[in-house]
Image 1 (tube, rainbow, N blue to C red):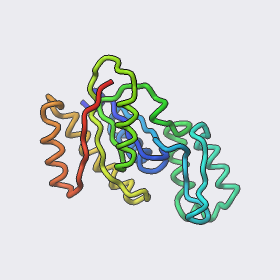
Image 2: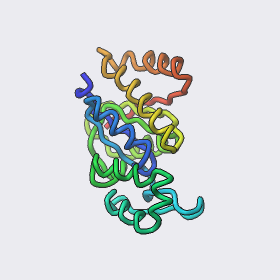
Image 3: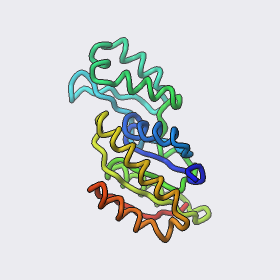
Length: 193
């Protein structure tokens, strides 16, 4: 059953890719949380070299109101206000993976740099009880369309994993089938809590 697995979905800012997957997996009955690994939360600004940057403690509502007051047209047209509206209906604010000490069965990263940061964080933690966690990466471009496609693919993969009677023994087969079907490479490693 989906609710048996604890899943985390992680991107850099806990805004687009991880939140799209969080929303989708949640609707499908999974126990899911989402996180970012970046130093700050970054959202597109009026120019590529002028992003809007926030601390992880800033709520989605506060970001929404800030961008609404800065340039309602720009942030409506580029979909940022829509995205923040969705996010604030899911949870109050972005969360940083490095400050969460919850345990998950599966952690899905949305880009290789984030995958590396997750592994580094888990390797640097004091070992607790040797519980395994499968860390997986599916590269997803950081735009609305790819985030939606990525959410479907993440759901497909974790659904297959949740249906497995022995995930530790069959995960390589599940990932290989997924890669072949979707023509998308997947990184996978096992870490321990």
